[in-house]
Image (tube, rainbow, N blue to C red; front, side, top):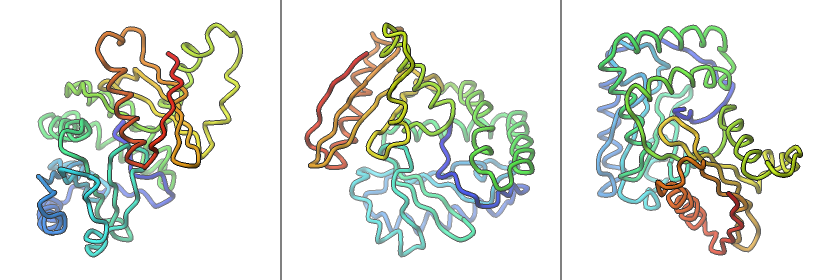
Length: 282
């Protein structure tokens, strides 16, 4: 649920808590404030290294909150040793990694993005509930031993407990992600079958688009619940088509569909797709 930056074959090591991690964060935050300048509003330490006593991969996860994501200068961050990685499946995130082996991850979000609240609630809940922190640590240690070179399965196997913690923490924001985890792909398939193909009585003939670079699939979360799905096709000449924009029937009267469409529209425009065609079903 808390999307990982990437799914690679790097060795997964979960280590006992290191009291130097908060110090590392403070030192790096000072450098980032200088690099980001007036665009930076605040900087948060997130992830397992931000929870005292919690075993973690020794990577400092950081959220710099900025006024305008488009004004973040890669050059200044590269000078600090960061490698730009784009959004990595999360619209309007700037993701950067540092070190080999990895020492820092940056997740840059604009002020007000619900992803900020989600990560802070997760962190603060674990800080306040040692029982859940212990469960999370035990799971990570178990999975790191089982999937030491399989980041995909390591990430997927944490998802259920992460969602449980987020529900306990009371997160109810709307977040949009490109489909990545198996649960997200399954949700996309369910939405397509229920709202697009229900009357046809046939299997989905467009599953080939799931692996096509010009066809993008997004899911909409309300808290930890899947409530929407969209299929977007990219064309040459700055054109894009929104083929499907579906929000669950029980959520129709909450304005979620309009908010979902606004995010997809804004995201396409931020990537210079100025000709947006909407063939919305659902």
